[in-house]
Image (tube, rainbow, N blue to C red; front, side, top):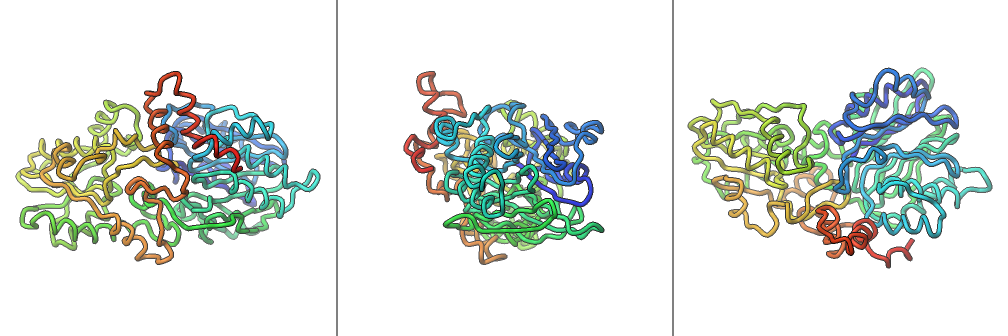
Length: 510
């Protein structure tokens, strides 16, 4: 999971990009980067940490130019942060391209071998984003007419990327001397939206992961980038768009609506906040079936993303709603943090109870989802320590039983608390008196009811069905072996190839 944005403006964009990354900080806290351009000259600064820590005044002064891209990063391949993998990436041949990517390629290693053996390109890191950049650069070279690019060549190159790359990707890229290119994978798994702003010098364009960026920077949302579509804004700020994929299906990641996106964003025509209210409506019906309402004294959300669902649930069930936890906003998201002890310590640092809301009461805690169960277990213990007589737990999402391979660094199946367990067993493990999960069809309905066009989702972490159709059991086993480091020396290279390349048979399908 990452945040990307790109701007073509009439005035310097370094501050716009910085402000936009601050708005998208929730999508990535490991690293940040900005690349700007003056004509054919790129300026780049990136580094580990939060946006505010990566960029100082001297760094901002070294980023001149009226167009640029930005990126904030979470790792997506289960490895510790490597500075060399911070984005944007840059390649100088054939035209000079910088690229920032949100998502994850599932055939990255097969592409990497093809880069070396056929395209005569070198990839210097294990990042699939660098692989994607080199695929794009190669396709631009193949589509170019002589030594020049035109719109047809650029869109033809994106079509080549779609044919070769498998998985999820929302991309912003700069082509030196030409303009800003943005495109989305044929399933639209990761979000991408484009907006405009009327400035004294003419129309300016912004492409970003979430619409909230438009609101914060004073842009008007034009529309979402369609699955398989590419948009291009040249240096004269002329906007062009074209469908570049042979076959498309709108199947956004359902976890974006559950947890990842900010509630004030509109994604594929649907308010994230409204979907979370709707989730609460459906979850209320499920709670009513499993827990007698006269056994619940109060509904308390786990801040922040579960708050809308908890409020709506309480309202529908006519139960008191209270804030029982205070959140320290300077601690990162715990389900992505490495190491069990670090996650457990982080939960206590992140949340503190308001004792009077628990003492002597039977409480229903509402969270957006349960992944490892670490946070849930700690929270139940905190509620009991604060004096709760009973602690019930409700999840606005179904049980997470499968890893996400499209850009969210979720744990292996063995680390997911729901793997191989019943709801009662999970309740026992987190220490709750009862546990209620949202049904998947109800979760999907809470979104599609707001936009009937959204009839298909990538819900693979809940149902194990991967929309791209190329993720096999062997691939998932190899992912887990690679991430856990349990593969032996003899098997480690095969595991890594399966993790990022599916199988050797995939190479011939480029």
